[in-house]
Image (cartoon, rainbow, N blue to C red; front, side, top):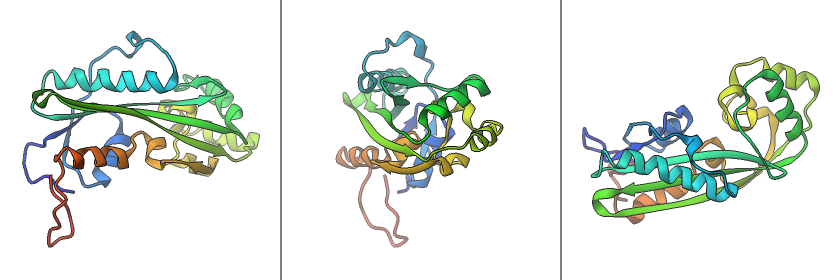
Length: 207
């Protein structure tokens, strides 16, 4: 899906390289303008509500400055036994998280929000994916936490990176675990007419 304009209609309100990669893989043209909200100011409620409210806050923050654009905000958390697993701050924390997840099923929640102030349109929801880890040996855990990968990832792993070997199966959206439910995002953009499903000679689509 291609945007023929030099000034993209879409803005990703996130500095996440994983979300950027997902939208680029989908062929979308967009700008990256991270939100400036203080995430700590958003009260933690239920996991489903928390990520949705936080995604809305991110999208609204950027949309105030760019009211004519369609802004996408998102937030992802990992939940195990009703405990939110954030980004580990040390190898010890990463080790503890991975031991918690070893051989167990956990949930990944991503809330996303898409809005355009000028059109008074906003949509948001939360998508959940179940993820089953393999039984991890101590040696596997030690190897993984000595890479740089776990330390900017919720739950201390990246399903799209080296951490792919940790995951035995998933039930639900794969891209949701990476950080953005691409199917749902594109469905909304099509519904709103932001994406035109018009076949081109190249086989691509246009915004």
